[in-house]
Image 1: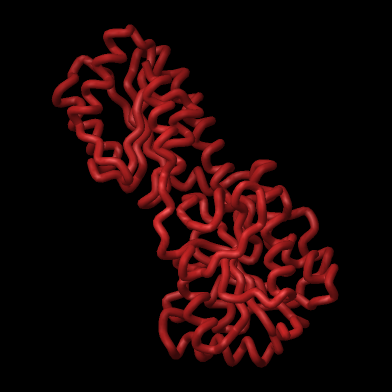
Image 2 (image 1 turned 30 degrees about the vertical axis):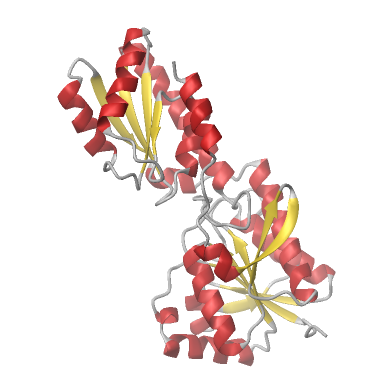
Length: 327
């Protein structure tokens, strides 16, 4: 039989993502609904190590559904990477009489959760909260949709000035080593091209695409660059293009951490709410060392190790669609 869960700890770790607050809210309210005490752990794993936690109630999570960031605060804990740090965290975990841990974050956060769970046999469930959308075991991660909408809104505004001055803009979006934000914002923003880490696009291919657009008298040109692309950052790519197409008036915009902030979209709020409830219900059913996700609109539980190690691939059909629409 599964161990009875009477008290849960919840933390947010790593980079913040819009919708994390909605996920915490769901974990808290689902726990209370099922008669489980829930403690909020502040500043990620550092809060577990330094015993920075407090019991949360229904009203503790009022009016946070629409807020970006995370009211529990987040951090990347170097101390938790050490055995000594994890041992201290476990001491506090036991002192607070916690039975399980819910970790909201990305692959780095889940790696720590997986190690902690293996070392001390602590029931752990991960909720994917990262704008990068780079975790296998779920179609979407919390924060991804909001980040794409933020990027697309910026592209729309930049296109206005690009059209007014007949300029070529290179816009760099986040995503680390994954091109999901770049692909979605490029299609949604009508970009002429997108360069992502997963595809080995060359400068010559980009030049060819831009020349074709010029021949078709495109009034504006926007190229989306994923921050981890192999050709370099947006400034590097712009400089290489300028060497061959000096007739373009070229500008560069790096959106940066703008994409992490803001009120989460309806999609992210609903996703976070579903995953938060599913995490609590999974723990009650004896699930552990898993990440909760949504695949084909159904709740799924994927072993954390598999979610971290499996490479989530871009949909090649989206590249085909983007090429067709870029003429």
